[in-house]
Length: 82
Image (tube, rainbow, N blue to C red; front, top):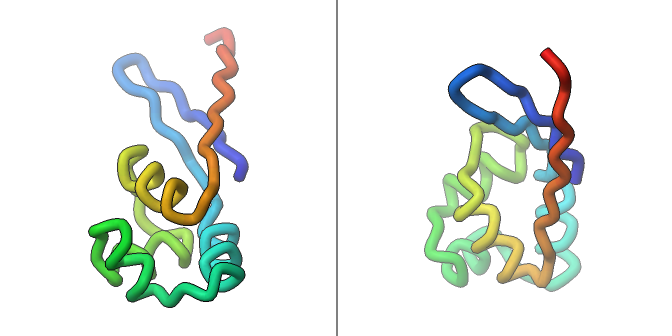
């Protein structure tokens, strides 16, 4: 999973592409999107959006998915001089 930070004066945003990783891991475990929805408490619609690399899920949402799929979220922060 690659996380690219975008810095502004008042906020830190992340652009992430990890939908395919989540989809492949879910399939490897034999889970449907409905199963993942049931285990995480997230809607199927949210699961579909994340797997399609659309939207901007919160870290909390990603943590729920990662925990269910046996994945770990690791972030690397790099300070860029303005």
